[in-house]
Image (cartoon, rainbow, N blue to C red; front, side):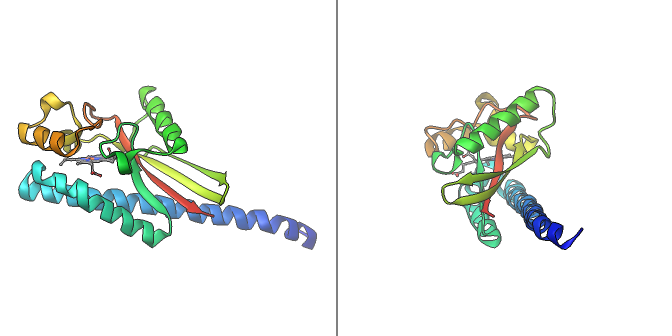
Amino acid sequence: MGLAGWLVGFPTQANDEVQRAALDDARKAATELVTGVRTELLKAIEASGPLRAIVVCKYVTPEIASAVSRKYGARVTRVSLTPRNPSLGWGDAWEQKVLMGFDERIAAGEKAEGMEFHEVVKEPSGKFLRYMRALPMQPACMHCHGPTDQMSEPIRSQLAHDYPHDRATGLTLGKARGAVTYKKPL
Ligand code: HEC
């Protein structure tokens, strides 16, 4: 490549590299959040049962999400089309569109495990890398997100007490409970 080509080519190449690095970070951050939550959740279920594990979802998960967000300089959290916690759980328009896309792909037979989507989006304040990864319903999730008639009575009443507007029940294995979402300025 001649000098002129290099001068013209360089910015896009640099751009590609920035985007690739950003996507790598997004994947790492999503894994850290998912692994952190799962570890704490399983530990709590094993140590004191699923009822006590509600505390993990309520207080420990937002802490892990904040720590991962600070570490990566990004917004990293969990969203759903049917959230339990309306203050954290609703996604924005882009996230809702991606979540609907995930549900369609799962309905068409694709596995929820490892399902992801990313896009560079322009917003008034600049360009962002956005990334999401589906959170499949696994056996452990059924305690608190499965059909209510299959839940233990203490969990059902605790959830009803803490989340009177709960929309996050009635799910079955293999469906997406929601997704991890990552947003970082480029
Ligand atoms: C012990 C009960 C319990 C178990 C088990 C559990 N969750 Fe939750 N989940 C909750 C509670 C409680 C909240 C709401 C937390 C809050 O107040 O922000 C929640 C919130 C969420 C959210 C955030 C969106 C929303 O609905 O507010 C996602 C995503 C989620 N859970 C996915 C999962 C997945 C996937 C599993 C299985 C790996 C799982 N949960 C297992 C109780 C549980």
